[in-house]
Image (cartoon, rainbow, N blue to C red; front, side, top):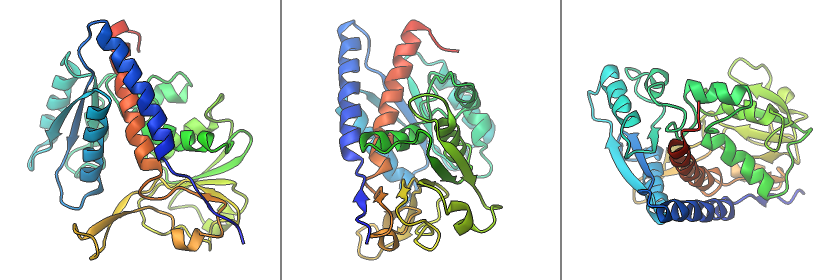
Amino acid sequence: MVVTRSLLGAPIAARILDDVRQRVAAGRARGRPAPCLASLYRRIPGSPFTFYARQQERAARDVGLAFREELIAPGLDAPGLRSRLRELEHDPTVHGVLVEHPLPPELDFDSAIAELGTAKDTDGVGMANLGQLAIQRPVQIPAVALAAVKILRHYGIRTDGERVAVVGRSTTVGLPLAILLASKGEWGNATVTVVHSKSPDLRKVLADQVIIFPCIGRPGFLDRSVVPKGAVVVDIGLSSVEDPTRPSGHRAAGDANPESLDGWASALTPVPGGVGPVTVAQLMANVVRGWELLERAEYP
């Protein structure tokens, strides 16, 4: 039987946040105002993003960042959202902007996020930042992708030369992660397979993969029937599932089935408690990076 190691995100998040505190303190000592993060999201009871936004706010305040809540009101149209993002891009008191995704169908995420420059695109998923990542000259590396890779580095799990699979091809998570893993340098050098809804025979595709990153938002779908024994699973999926034992009636769930993979996978990130806290910490680091870039005007 394989002993499945739990790859907890807390120690990595703590280290990132300590670095953020020091950088904020250094900037404030030079007379700069605190970095400010503006978070645009819909307030939906039971939504994982509402919980995620609260985590963002707590982390921001803890490390000395200002936090601005920007609720997406019902009925907001696409031009209105783009206009609001243009205002934030030109607001000198804001240094990072996050936009909930996916948005409702009437609000196109890609065209909205394109209103932000590379420095203020805190999540690193706008077209400009993805282009910079693709040519291996990143400005803001997508926070979720970088968080997943940082977890592996912390626990001594190498991607260099390994066969890895990204299960999902969204432009906000799956594709940026695949680019990062395939890139030259400290974050990549992996041989990457991207798995998606048109990939036939998932078990066969994943059969020789050493590390698997599920990120499609289907709770519990990845189990030992498709995961090769001994693989590392970095679970990026986040869904809200009904749970009558919780006060909210819901709980967060990942794409991996932890009960099935316990004793089968060699390592697994829990949900919650794995990639999530590291992503939140990395977002804070990206806000501070934007703050520093805007001060020096050193960005595309």
